[in-house]
Length: 158
Image (spheres, rainbow, N blue to C red):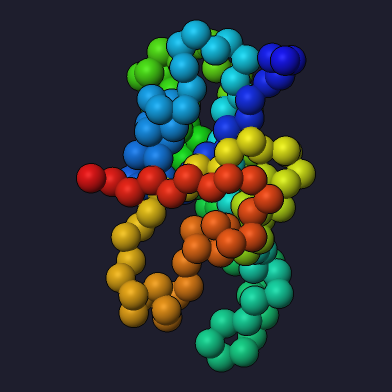
């Protein structure tokens, strides 16, 4: 049997839940003896505001769009730095880490990235929304469980 690279994709965002899921993944899915693992950190930026309208129906000015895009880029960089710090805390030197930043609706970007990058496992944190909140807001993790082309692990913080 060929010892091919095992790809574990972890969807990360600003939440403590996603950082816990990352910690859990390193502890439980990536063994110290397996030097052939790739940890893919995926952050999804919201779609560009270019087509968004404000409440009065006006298209945002170029300055406002640039400021939003700059903030989004800084947020992505900040989230990735936090994720890398978690990896360093686990002394994950044997893990090949790849950072991926996508843009769009999170549920679609996550499922498409998992398929395109051929993830063996997709790991996501659970925000722990109740039935009503999940019904109103929808659940990215529920969508991914149903639509991803690889096994999906939903990690809940204790």
